[in-house]
Image 1: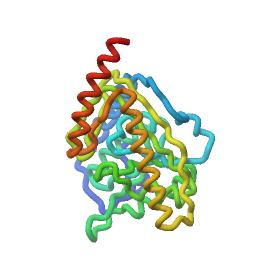
Image 2: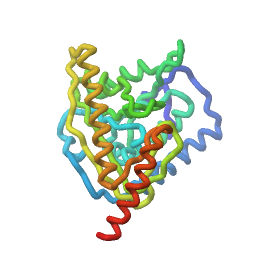
Image 3: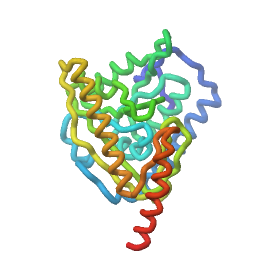
Image 4: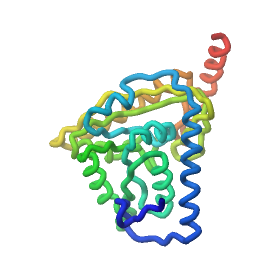
Length: 268
């Protein structure tokens, strides 16, 4: 279906026109793209899991799932099955993302961060997301997204946890082979039939009365855990995937580690 921005909970800072041919494309392309993503994710083999699986949280209050933007792809599968609510841009491009997310199983609120003096609905969308988490829905946050810098945490996840009393649950995965995009964070998509390592992190709580110093300490804790889990997931396969355009040393290390991993696989 086509989402009605006025009635389906998708807010936007200003209306935009969708041409008749775009409406047809929005009805056909998003479900196809979602099917391709699901098909790719179904081909993966989970070979290592640390921590509690998502299903073990089904009987507890809602949570705030948190990961790096670079590692979002496999979470399209795991978070989509949990019908996690995420924030999607209120732009026209975001309309496509909202439809694809719907077919993957996500719920969403619409809004973007401010650009200069222009309000793009980000504050209103954050308030709506906090309200939904209080009502029992879980939120999914890309800690450094949507535009980076890579692996620098934005305040969104911490703010939601503080306002709702829900836990932040760091989530991470790694893989043995992937396509690496030339984006700001070197976005990863595991190749078909890739092996996946997953870490479900321990919950992190944010006191409602936390001061700036305490919030900064929690921000650092979440960042450190996401980085630690990323390294552990990657090291399971002898990897060190680059995460920025400047991380050339990681690429060189990864090349050497991959050779060692392949030799270990052949000798096993």
